[in-house]
Image (cartoon, rainbow, N blue to C red; front, top):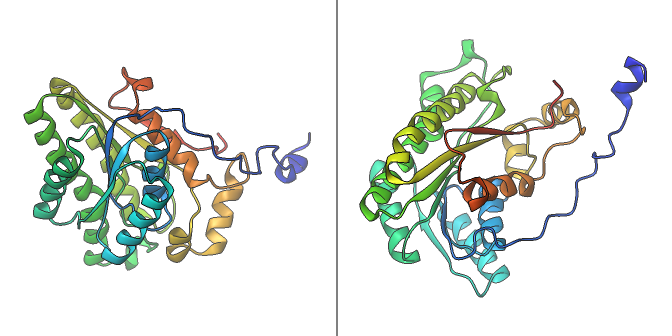
Amino acid sequence: MTVSDSRTHRSPLADPPAETPGHGLLAGRKVVVTAAAGTGIGFATARRALLEGAEVLVSDWHERRLAEAQAELAAQFPDQQVAHAVCDVSDTGQVDALISRAADELGRIDVLVNNAGLGGETPVADMTDEQWDRVIDITLNGTFRATRAALRYFRAVEHGGVIVNNASVLGWRAQRGQAHYAAAKAGVMALTRCAAIEAADVGVRINAVAPSIAKHPFLAKVTSDDLLDELAAREAYGRAAEVWEVAATIAMLASDYTTYLTGEVVSISSQRA
């Protein structure tokens, strides 16, 4: 195949596969997912956890969308508990209250998925302090606050647990207009590695996923269609990931299939080398 042909070749994996059915990976587990309202990775992760047999508490800052998400999940999984709690991860008091409430409503916490994050597209020269600080505070500091609260909980109850953070390949790779987001996600990766060493002392595993691109309606609101198409075209499959494909990897990291894995960042990407 010539170079020209390789650029236009359509991968046999370009069509998204059907969603993989559940296999009981999280049966009986109690899972908390932040930023789970709407149609993004957080909602898909909560749904995947339920599909794998867990009971779930979903959280988000937007009360109406959160209630809608909870109702939709409860309708799909009527025999499993689906609780919800409003939480702004930029507020330490709300984050601490989220962990306490989740433990009360679910009976305990086995898994925390830190999905809350905020992006945007602004060149460094045009970026304001407020834009920088907001992305860092939600994406990095919010993950820190929730991780800290969960570790304090796990340390007190002494039954171990799992934390999975949502990072991004931009923690490794450069992209125009994404300095604040990339810096925050690189920080999430570093937090994951360092916190995992400490968490091992209380029987907790901490890992992260780093998706390249998972296209969903919320992402389309903050990123141009042209850029999304360009990013998808760079993938070896020629498409963005489905959100369930990211969620399935998060479920694997939360399960007993990865008991010797901690402090790692798993890239969910088909990008060309």
